[in-house]
Length: 263
Image (cartoon, rainbow, N blue to C red; front, side, top):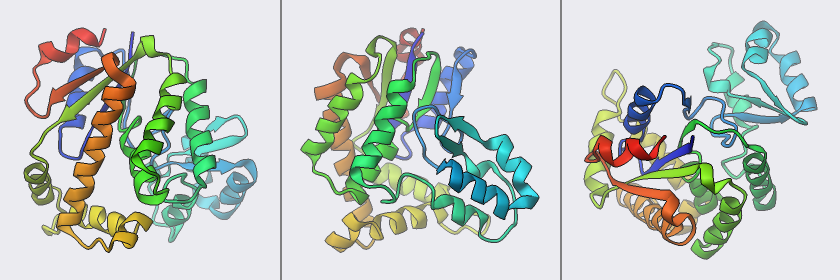
């Protein structure tokens, strides 16, 4: 059985594809963003024992909830903290400081953490979303500000650490980036109709070192970033992953194009 990695820009239908594959093959372990993943750390705190013990001491009322969500990995503790529901002021904000993304690690440390976890991962039948490209690439582009060629060099090392026989990348592609982004901008709103997703995405981009250096401000800059990221992702497929990737037309793929390769 394969480990399947689903990638593509926002709005391309990654979650829908993940659900379809999971329904067809229920024995796959589904790893969604924000949940524990053996290879990705998006929306997870990555803590030493000292840091973890400090959090347990500080947040005694939810200590048991924190422990239930914790996965111990060698000398570190992974806490998918967004799954902990609490109204304790500052808890989620403090846990966010232990993430590896957002420029919180040096480039060397970031790459070592990613490579180490991928090298240790030896199981199969996992279904990942955004674990191979999206979160890593946004970090490398926006916060580490490495060049496209340096990104390719890192992915050559990362891909060499994977059991390629068990690896399959499903990439959802569209050249209608602006139209699809406009659609999800309107759809992903709160109960008052506020475009919360769009505001979050623009804020993340504008306040990143990459965005600040270029004077990014809004819509056009977000679309430019998405176009750039898709170019890099397709280059990784062409030059690194090659035949272990399937590029699918976003929102237009057919089950017969996919499901046969997932077994």
